Amino acid sequence: MREKAVNMTEGKILPQLVRFGLPVLLGMLFQRIYNFADVYIVGRYLGDNALAAVSIAGTAMYLLYSVMMGLSTGVSVVISRYYGANELENVVDSYVTSIYVSVAAVVVITASGVAGTRPLLEILQTSEELMPEAVEYLIWIFVGCGGTMLYNWISSVLRSLGNSVVPLIFLIVSSVLNVILDVVFVVWIPMGVKGAALATVAAQVLSGILCVIYALKILPFLRIKREQFHCRKDLVKEILIYGVPTGLQMSIISISDLTLQAVINTYETALIVAYGVCLKVEGLGFQIADAIGTSLGTFVGQNVGAKKYDRVKKGVRCAYLINGICYGVFCPCIYFFAEPIMRAFTKNTASVGYGMEYLHIMAVFFVTGGLLVIYHNVLRPSGDVAVTILMGVSEVITRISFAFLLSAWFGYRGLWWVSPITWVCAAGVGAVRYYSGKWEGKA
Image (tube, rainbow, N blue to C red; front, side, top):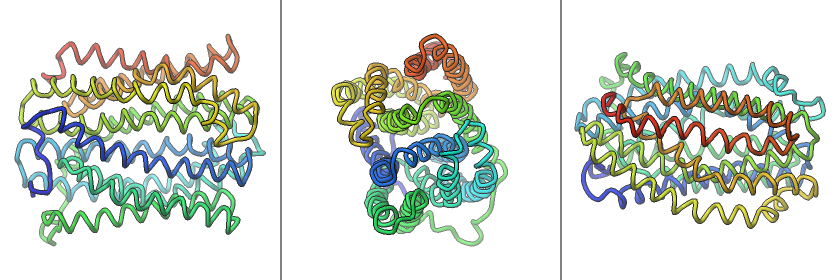
């Protein structure tokens, strides 16, 4: 099994984090192509109203996707810790148990997502003009969420074992397919926003299936025999101990995002469009932080399992270095190319102007967002999950409070400062906890 995985408890740390994180980053970037393809093609061929509807739906979609992403994180943490401790039987049992957990999550997410689409969009104060297309897009996304869960689950399993290349390969394939299907379903076969949703769902299903097939081929231990196919309650509990707080943290953060979106929705369509495009850019920027965090999380999980806490601290310092270098390149690009970025998605002059203002502010604070993700991914695998929830709560309080206060004081321009202030506050909570050293006791 180990010949197809990577043991991160030994060897030089910086090269390990880079080698692991680079494929993760590339995979996330290609996954982001799903969203950019939707936004670009919808904006170009269906107009600003459809683009605004898809943007609103995307914000709402993240709330229930948080459950899926949280559980995948729980699977990754549990398997990586057992792998670092060289408890291979528990690695296999955790893998099997995670299948049951993932299937149950898909059922819950699909049912609640489809049933709650319109009420959720109404809470977001979505206008009647945008409501039909937002509902149509969101329902089809939730119907196909099984494909997204499939890919996230098998990717979390492979990455917990130090294998970040296989998920990348098949995500590239599906990303190309997604772009092609976007053109087919939206441009050639005029299916509207439904076509954009179907293209995304089809590509995600394919990436998940191909990743599973190939993983079974290169990792024979994943080919579970009938007598091995059982669900261990203690491992379900362990996965949920790490996964539920993570999902809860992401959910409450998304609730604060929804609050900000609701405030944005009270403004004109041009501002909604600008915010939607900037969210895509923000998401792209956080792919860097998420890649560093995923790499660090696997590293920390394995080394905590091996009880090598000094090595964990060295890994965090390496993550700081990578974070600084990456955003030292990315942020100036966003700042100086804000106008062409906006014009690539909308021809509305007002939207371009709004978006440029937000991107200029966002670019200055991205490095702080990267530090926030680093602290999440050192504290969570160490077992200090309560603090990660506290960090999420601080994000909620900050974002909701400043969304209303700053918009009341400074109008729409105040809204551009909400997320940056939120990143600084939450990262501060994580920094205080990490440097206190109390996470070692939790580990």
